[in-house]
Amino acid sequence: MMGKTIFIDPGRCIGCQACVSACRECDSHRGKSMIHLDYTEPGQSVASLPTVCMHCEDPVAPCAEVCPADAILVTADGVVQQADTTRCIGCANCVNACPFGVPKIDLEAKLQMKCNLCYDRTAYGLAPMCATVCPTGALFYGTLEELQAERPGVQVADSFAFGDVMVSTGVAMVVPADKVQWPVPGGLPVVEVNGIDVR
Image (cartoon, rainbow, N blue to C red):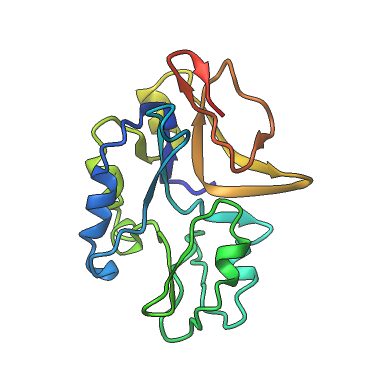
C-alpha cells in the first residue's frame, strides 16, 4: 500500500455528493467528475458508497495490463493514471478489465476517464479534492497510522478476492473490525447500516 492514500469508509458516507462536485472542479477533468457515488440498494436503503480508482498494485493494474495502446501509465509511487489522451483509442478494454467498475468511456470524446488520485495535487503533498470536502470522513487521505490515530481500532483492507484471483490495491477500504472476513470479497464492500450488514 502507498504511504499516503485514500481510505474509503463506507459506513460514514451520507450520499451528499460533495465529493462528486469537488472532483468536477479539477481543471484536468474539464468539468467531469471522476468519482462515482453508488447506492448499494436503491429504493431499499440510503446506504451509499463513493467509488474511486483503487490503484491496483498486484499483479499489475488490470486496466493498464489490457490496454493495447499503452495509454494507462502507472507512476513510480503506484498511482494508476487516467488514459493518455494522445494514445487512448476508446476501445473500453480497461472498462471490462477493472474488477471495481471504475473506468468509464466518454463516448463523445472516445476516451477513457477515471480517478487518478488528483495526482496534480497529491504529487505536491495536497489531499485529493474529494477527501478535502467530505464532511463525514468517508474519504480520508493520509497514512494508515494517521487514520488509526484518528479512529482507534479501525481495520482496513487492501486485498480483495475475485474468485481465485487476489487483487492488491493502493487505496484501502475501512471494514468493521467485528465483521471482517479475510480475504474481503471483491466488488462487495463491507457496509453496515443500523447494525445490519448490507453486503
